[in-house]
Length: 91
Picture (tube, rainbow, N blue to C red):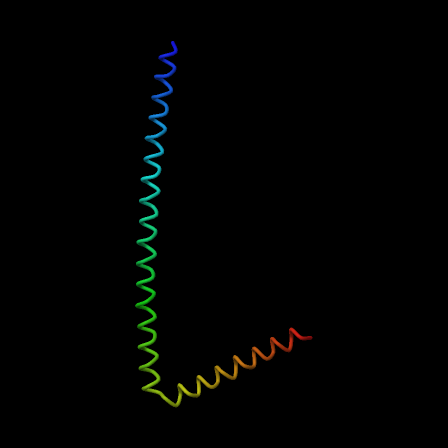
């Protein structure tokens, strides 16, 4: 009787160890897939930024005056917004 209890306990321990091993393997696969997806997304993001910079450079070369006017207007708008926020916070 004692041997059958030990035998059952050993079988249960082996089964648990097998399940833990499978779970560890699945977890490792999921993590690897996540890392691969993150690398792919980062690579795509880098390409998008490169394309945006190239496009911006082309537009500035093609339309220099308009680019300067838009940049100046954006600076005025950002400065006004920051000034308004500071004034509002101090009140």
